[in-house]
Amino acid sequence: MPSALEIKEDFKYAVLVELGILIAAAANVLYSGDFENFFLYVLIFLAVILGEWLAEKGLLISKERNMVVKYQKIIDEKRSAKRAIALLFFILIVLSSWGVLSYLTRIYYNTRDYARALTLMLPWYIATYAVWLGLLIYMKEKHVKLLLALLSKKRNEGKIRYVLLLFGAEVLVRESFVSDGSEEKLAELLAEHSEDFRYMGMQISVAWVGKLKLGVASTGPLSSKTRLKMKDALRAIKIAYPKKFETGEFNVVERKELEAIIRRYILS
Image (cartoon, rainbow, N blue to C red):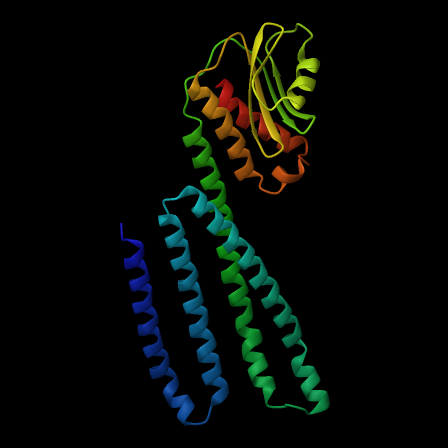
């Protein structure tokens, strides 16, 4: 597989070749004074270069080894792609009426040809960014699934009686394997404690990240490996829901997904 440096060099070489082709193809129309067609040629080659530029970004992101950096790059590129699509749509709307305005006012009459060329090419730019956005969404989902799969490799602990996930004092996920009536009280105590404690003969192991708190009630102390996995589960939730991790506003479907994450780490 080519390195990141080789990918950048290959794309730079491709751009230089395409610029040479553009100069050769547009030279005749430029010398003959056909500036409108020259402008159209430039827009076509810019569309090709835009597609290659985004393809280069995708390859470089896929080569990133640091999982956190990779995820952040995907999020940043998604934000940029949405802004670019919105801007291009705005320009397209303005240009769609430019011909009518210039015809009625006779002001900048010659700009209609340039506006027509832009109007012709802007949908291709929008489509290119739309494909890029779809690829980023796919990469994000694949990245999260891979991260969860890597973090969930564990040897399951026995004798777990309760698993509770809290946001502040609100219970988001609850798993009970006994019915001794201590679940509600345990949730209240877990909201008050930020360290391990004991309750009704059970060892309550506590892990927290931000306002999310995970408590596992067991008949004995958990292994250090399981304790680390509790923390990893909370970090995985933070990565999967970066905004709602701060607000705690998880809907019913998302709470089911939280439950699936907890099960994968603690109970599978």
